Length: 263
Image (cartoon, rainbow, N blue to C red; front, side):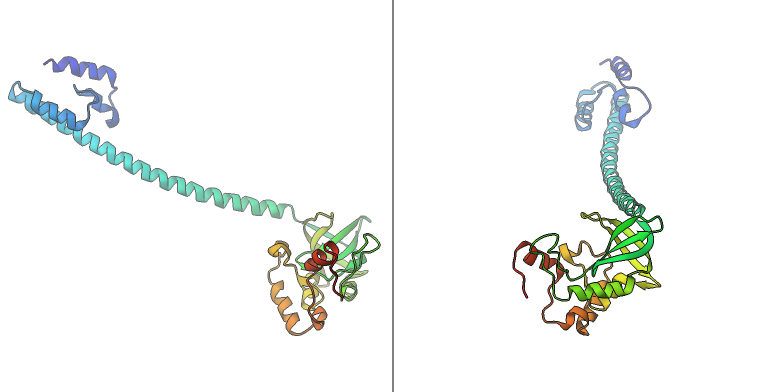
């Protein structure tokens, strides 16, 4: 058996250096460790020294392959952990980016209220004489009649009183607004403050508007308004002095779209 020639061929095929490739230096090339060990013990019938040398080499190969299998398993586990960590980082980064992007689109307005449309909408005139139609964020006030614009859009009970209450707070006065977006009707959706009063909250607290929980609370940025509404209801303030007041979003669906307008 010319082990020298085989070893030389193995060296030509496999570069030296890494344990994962050093197996090719042995005369049996890429044989499985168990098969290689069996061949060494049964086929090495020469001198005792040569048999012992081959046996040692077989043992080293078996140990190397065991280590490679263990390393491979550890590598897979490590890869899973790294991928999991990267996933968490990606989610956190997306949330942070989304939050920053949302805030980047928020903006401030300042001006004087020149017209009140209903209990949650008014017209603002800024210092450059530009008009903005403002929708108070996080609230929904009882609807006033819109029959001039569209037939059948009758007003809700307390709609006019809600409008009057908002006008009393803001009409003709300078106001500061923190705005979030424009809605589908091109109105600026804003938090409104005048002389330190948070107008959105005051409308709910006084009972002249609901915390806007339409569409599952999608438009409710100020969650504390739910508690303000509950307190106004318990004290029977504003619309809560009446019997079974109907939420504006229900009124629009039932009356304006469905034609069922309770009196």
